[in-house]
Image 1: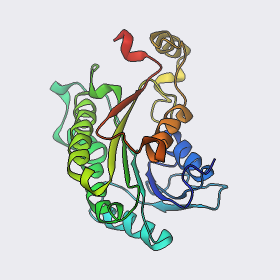
Image 2: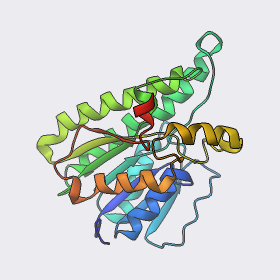
Image 3: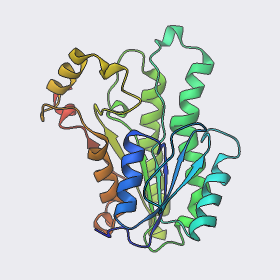
Image 4: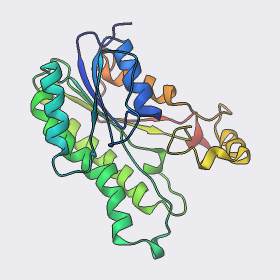
Length: 244
């Protein structure tokens, strides 16, 4: 407990799944949290240390609105968890520019823009942390996932560069690569019990991941325990990649 005592965090994509689990876990460990998700998302939390903001992270003014709200509410920023993301399955031959761009805008460009906005506040923190949700898809692929895989691979490149550029300021930057996790985004695919069975067998732990499995990795990276860990991509996949 209290591994994040007195720290202030932003968690995007916080209405459900990994983001929600992370926001709640960060708060339980002592952090004040700004939970961000798209307008109309269910941003209700029992923990009063969690502030909420409805915002489309791909919007023109989103970075300033998100970081500004955190600084207004908390007076500081120690942790930025870029978790929000979307996915769609379209083969390259049929993919429109708009379909490509929408995933890039949310899954990669927004990560860059919000992080850039947050850097001046993070360098003032005694333990600045940047965490981003990538995916095992950053290292592999599947049919129809060209834009998604490209964006997630981009997060790894961005993370390494952030670690290099901000290391002298004491700010760490790391990425998490979830595998097959039961979240709102994957709910449709895992509604079929056969699909669950197939993906559970691919994991050496013989189960799908839960949002809390990834949130615990995010907590580690946000805490002092990871003070000497930077520029890394940590798989939280139950050993899925061992079989890929």
